[in-house]
Amino acid sequence: MSRRDLILAVTALVVVALAGVWRISRGTARPFARGTVVRAVDGDTIIVRSGGAIEDVRLLGIDTPETVDPRRPVGCYGPEASAFTKHLVTGRTVTLQYDRELHDRYGRFLAYVWLAGPRPVFVNAELVRRGYARSYPFPPNTAHAGLFAALERSAAVAGRGLWHACE
Image 1 (cartoon, rainbow, N blue to C red):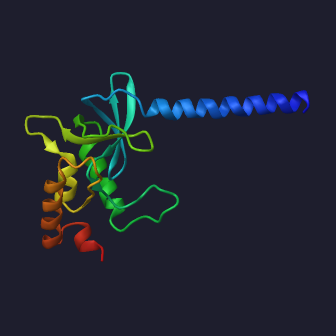
Image 2: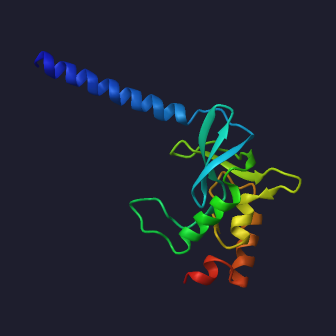
Image 3: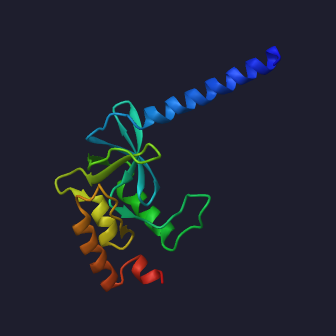
């Protein structure tokens, strides 16, 4: 092995190691209870700033139709769900509550999210209630699974949102 090949091999190992450390550290960030929504990535993922930290937060217990995954087509009612989430939360102060797991496999926080204010709005539930999201129980994070299932049934029976627009 030449000196050049050795340097390339060591450099590759260092890059792989640093990528692993970065991925692990993303999954061990300390949870925060309150922050401001910087933006909505899609219908069920938001970016929240708390202090100096900016973190991705996946809304727990629900699933909105896909809009950003390049491997999957845009789902029926996905753009509407994304637009509603953006309108509802961007720039607003939110409170986060966690369940059994803090992070998903992508390093995002998993949280139930409330809009702060005199009459807090449970964002996850509001999305299901209005037909922008389906209930998505993902054990062991099921603290509100019964509520989300009941809201989904009600939205489906009433033909709200995706229950009206999508077959």
